[in-house]
Image (cartoon, rainbow, N blue to C red):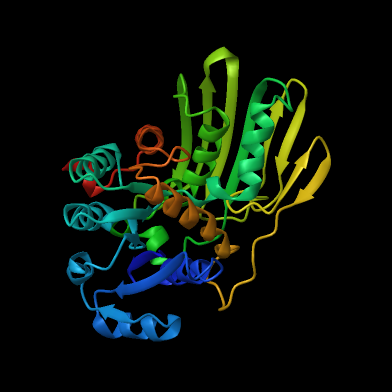
Length: 334
């Protein structure tokens, strides 16, 4: 039986996710329905992607009995109410990153998923790329010895976009793109909570962070540093340095298609898309989709690759970084 997907939101990321699903076998993944706030948007999306059912509200999708899992692609200030709508309707959920605006909201979503006995995963797609799987394998077998330092950066000039600059749309570099650097660090250090977090940054007139530099100290004197920016283009690579060598992820570290292990480079290409994409290497979202299918087939309620505990850790560190930089959203005051 194919896993029947419902797509919530007819925006750019939902388009790319749907294109990514088309790179997987149709007898394993099918998009059964799409929902948008305007019916005409859902109908246009459905026509473009050959989807049989289009809804003009998210509630209609939540009531559809022929959906196994919902992909939530709305902007992050709306993740909490949207996820609760679907979990309370007993729907499994794959929600875009960041899972929510802060730790309080993340815990509310996860509590609802547990109470309703449904699967829920934060769509940290990077972790499922073949290159990321190989990184974890290399670290587990001690290829670079004991890891001492992790450095990563993600900077793209998107501050002109409303969703990057406007606070009410969840603007700010840390939640939008810094999460990729943070999740990478947490993956390398096996989900360990940092002992010390030091963050400094530059905020815009609208009160969101445009560039942030973070230093993290972990147990056994292990460090990590990352920079994220919505103002400037950065080299966008990452490196893991250990006592016996290094693993470098050339640009672009959030959707990696190559690795340099002690100077030797290996390619991990993603499939070509059937339609033009909005974002780089988006067919790589196929790997998180397949993880969801495998978890559902096994009856699991969370993935071991990006667990509920992982999502809480990301949110807790993000909250502390924002506190130090001085970014406060309305959701923090509720």
